[in-house]
View 1 (tube, helix red, strand yellow):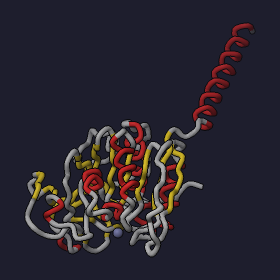
View 2 (view 1 turned 30 degrees about the vertical axis):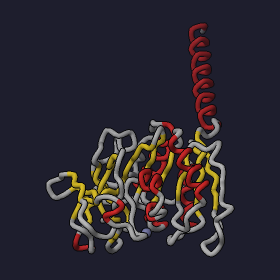
View 3 (view 1 turned 90 degrees about the horizontal axis):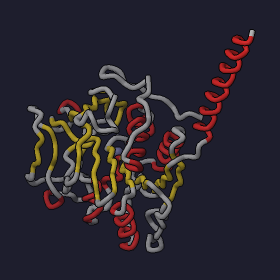
View 4 (view 1 turned 180 degrees about the vertical axis):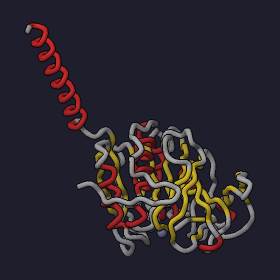
Amino acid sequence: MKNNLVLLLSVLCFSFSALNASAVSHSAPPKWKVLIIDGQNNHKWAITTPIMKGYLEETGLFMVDVLTTPPKDSSLDQFMPSFKGYDVILSNYNGKSWPRQTELALEKFVAKGGGLVIIHAADNSFPYWKAYNEMIGLGGWEKRTEKDGPYVYYNEKDELIRDNSPGPGGHHGTQHEFVIKTRIEEHPIMKGLPMEWLHTKDELYDLMRGPAINMNILATAYSSKDQKGTGRHEPSVLTLNYGKGKIFHNMMGHEDYSMHCVGFITLLQRGTEWVASGKVTQEVPSNFPTKEKSSSRQPQK
Ligand SMILES: [Zn+2]
């Protein structure tokens, strides 16, 4: 009888502490503060910002604020936000230049150790801002040419090529589902992901150019000539360092349906954690796409 009582008590104690531990982890406040900047973009920023905010917040790791710039036809002279208190700035912005003071504030934020996340057309922005192009590594459109840096890609023999030949920067073929291929398997953002997986319908950016310094190509996508592409393995997921700061640059994310890809969501969540902390604590979801089958979902309510 006494032994049974001891057993019962220890089971109860164990259950209580297990319950308590899970309650603590769920009620812990988010660790990282993220600021999404939008307001101008030739894409549907008013739809895609809440989608990304939702996917970040559902991890429990991030608290996300949104900063919307004045619209395209207004002056941005007074756009001088403070980045103080944030761990990560996420740009969903592709529009008019910012005041020099604001550019310098972002440069300082990243150089001192802040995280920056660049999604899709945010890498079209600011062609004349030198530090921004160093932070994103590769950019496109907005009259980018050989003056902005080389084309960077893997050729058919899987050799990494830096190509200084003249020509415009930034192009994409028709939208389609395409395979993302991991290039740096051991990077915390990529660890545990399949080496190849099928992304949902999106634009596959190619012919991107830029300074491409302090840059790692985590993944590429093959830009097929059948889809009016280049026939090259084009960089699609990058990380960079700028001063003490980290940058995660994902060229995917043209439309809402591109962002509902479980692969895109996983990269967004992991990339944002990595730029904030240098680590990734999130598991790979069980419904991650395979090479043959893409996988989509909606944000958790
Ligand atoms: Zn696009």
